[in-house]
Length: 172
Image (cartoon, rainbow, N blue to C red; front, top):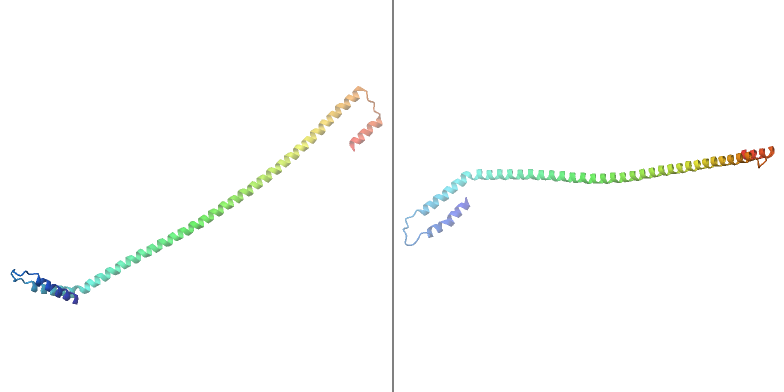
């Protein structure tokens, strides 16, 4: 109320000085200014509480909306943080899976290499045995052919005793 009165008092000299010197001074500006100040004071007296309440309620509603937005922002930020944490955990898990897969591949390679080496060794052993068997077989055939040829030609005469010594040497 004091502000309005001060405003009215401050504006009244301007209104009084605004009239020209040679013009007619029959204006009712002072009465109108006083009436306006009284009207503004009555309006302020009647509506001040309602206006203050309106702006206080408006301020509270704006504050509550701001709080809701802040809560939503915090919830969103916590979800982002949680998602980033899960992403990091997933990256770590993926790295572990890749590392485990590499070690599994290495162990499988080693097992396959060991199995292949064992099979190659077994094949070489079987091959060597087969060669030995074939060599013996070939020797027997050659010896049999040579003996048969010798016995059939009659050039070599063996006694029974010599023949039994040869057989005994062969058996032993």
